[in-house]
Length: 121
Image 1 (cartoon, rainbow, N blue to C red):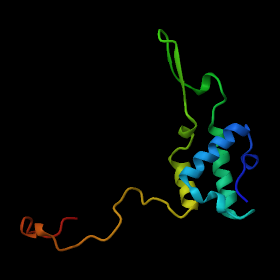
Image 2: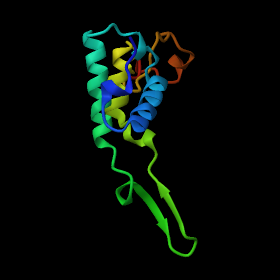
Image 3: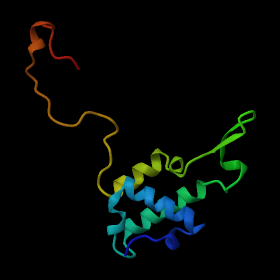
Image 4: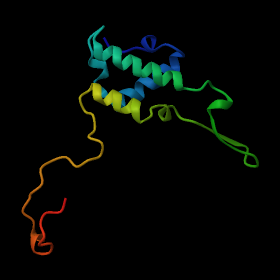
């Protein structure tokens, strides 16, 4: 059974918005079995993200303009910091490698004659 807003708690609309964004980060979260450890972990991460959401009002305000009379609010997606995104992705088995290159690279290169002292490390 998929994770529901009732599992996360709080305001239902905000919980639904968090779930939609969480599914875009880690599409597998709806495939977890009930009472499984991955589902409990995902719910814990989402509850943490929800707890970081400021209440509607002045704390959610990101910028204010006086003469233009405009206000912009922090978006829900900004609540998913790097740790929360990485945690959700790891539950799907797609944790990133930290930005390092992935793959095999040839050792014989045409630059061998340019730097004769050996391989660059």
